Length: 571
Figure 1 (tube, rainbow, N blue to C red):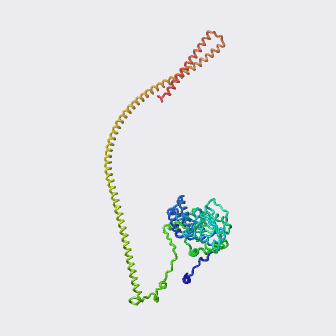
Figure 2: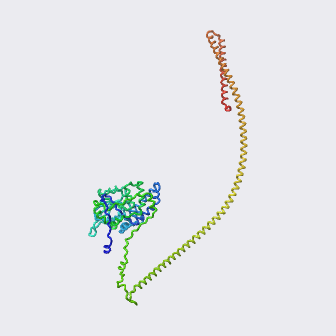
Figure 3: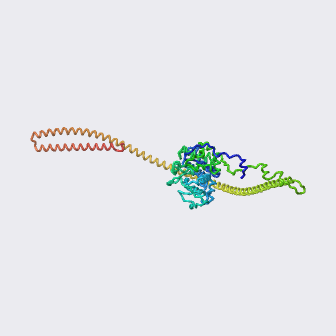
């Protein structure tokens, strides 16, 4: 230990500016840094969804495919913020129960390192701590980390990686009093009746109601491990103002993920010494977290970004400064001389032998400089020769490629020429075939035209004959109609004569009836001879026969007149 360097150095700044309030809410956010691999993966995850993000912000298209793509973005960002092995699973150790796995997990994830530091400060307390996280591989990784700590492990979902052995209480082996319970956050049918003294939310999957149901009392704190400026920080912040799944929530979360991807895992300057000292600043709070206020300030708020901020951020390339080990302070010139004992009064530097009993350090320095110069020149020459050799090899390779390409091109040109010549010959054959087909078409058209003319003449002749027949038939119809009209006139005249005759007959019948009545009255008054009576009856019978005959003729004449009127030739 260099005490002089420590005493002469500048004093260490305070860890945290004492501006924190008395925070006893019971729901605390612990900022968590991220390793470089996590930061780079976060940028790559956002870059994979570049087109969908722009489409979501620049258009009104809210199709289910686009929303599913954003859901994949949220899920992958959460996995990277928790541990990159959850997304890049081919880096996952095959056996999580080995002794070096906890260190490997802590080196590749800030959350696992912070969790191990917290557990190291809670190891001396006899309490039950609930560690809540996403089900699946994450629970296996958490158990693997806890295997490297001094605590009892109880897993409430899934199988254990390693059966815990019974601890032997010896002087060197203290008993394990801390009990860590691994609980899944996204299993629907999971129910537990256990209650805990401290609840640690490892990611953002559990709901507030689920976390509160695990507490023994309302004063039991909930500690959330939140990667700064990551999706954990962004989602928890905006859940205070919007419901999950709403459009405004999705817009704000997506915009913040894109814009803040170059600041993920970056701690505020006043909090960095806490993590350099493995969170020993929280030791007092870990000893009595029920009554002790939360010693850290609240995490920073997240700005509300719009589509313009998202577009500008996507057009910029993200660069991360890799965390290297702290550089040593440069040693001054005189300090280097002193450390190397290279000063004038050092007797070991004087040479008093040889031909000249004088200090020969100048000749040594000159020779050394010459050797250095020659070495440098030879090195430069060797570099030039290597470069020339490389260029010659590259030139030869280019020439070989050029020859191969030239031969391929010549073969292709030859093939194209052959195809062109064959195509030309085929086109000539096709032209001759086309000409012959044209001549055949002309002959066929002439033949068809002649055939069509003969057919038309024959058709015209047939139509003329049909027209003459129809004219003759129409003439006959006209003659028949004239004859029928004449017959109808005669019939009408006969009907009128018959009507006159009927009237006369009716009149005669009336007169005869009167005579009969007179005769009948006379007959009743007088005694009539049988011969005379017989003569009268014969006279009556003859009159009845005449009347019936006249009525029959009249009815026959009316029927003939009606038939002639309804004849088709008269219509």
